[in-house]
Image 1 (cartoon, rainbow, N blue to C red):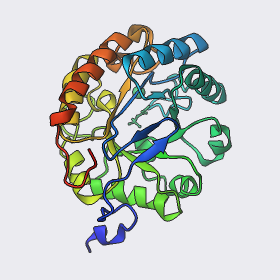
Image 2 (cartoon, helix red, strand yellow):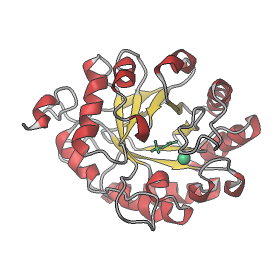
Image 3 (cartoon, protein in one colour):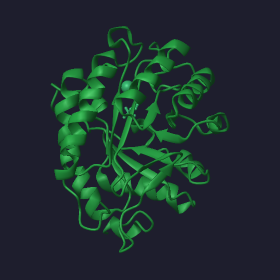
Length: 277
Ligand code: PEP
Ligand code: MN
């Protein structure tokens, strides 16, 4: 059976593409987002410094993990509630809305001060979590699972939307293939494929897709060229000391260069018919 027939609210209609409003900014239908910040919130100093720097460099949202779904139980797991508090405070101080990942339903009450709730790759098919987030009134950033198809991603979005929350932003962050030179393989064609099927904004995360700081610039430009609605990039004031994903983190200065170069090419990037420019 054609499972696209099971997608209702996420499907493209003649109403055009969705724009998700988040505080003083927006993502989709012509609004390009730059989401930047560390893999994890580590300290007051680290998240405040990052927030100020990325804002100056052109970021439109601040990211930072408080609950980290780490592959090893012995790796840094994030600061939890304290991380959420520091992130929200740094966001307010810099004027940037904040996005951070939820890993279990029971934590939802702690996300009061958070603007966008992220569902990570590992939870893309955590259906009870998706249903619960469908009942909340915050935008959801839904990342593609590394072993999931585009169809499955859209059906996961449908889980959230079917419960009433239509503010879903999709994120391509690479899938697992036989290639080992990069952390994952960025499925660049998923961007125009999703544009043809769905009205939802789709952003790209070149950090987790490549796993390597030196690849963030070229892959960001490629993602923008393919027509994505924004980039989510891991930025750390001192990447070599990062408690999580330092090898793929870039400095605020490197991020600034990416924003400048991406802004330069945006006018000639792919725009699907019907997008508001
Ligand atoms: C993240 O963005 O912090 C993250 C854990 O990414 P992913 O879920 O794509 O691995
Ligand atoms: Mn990370």
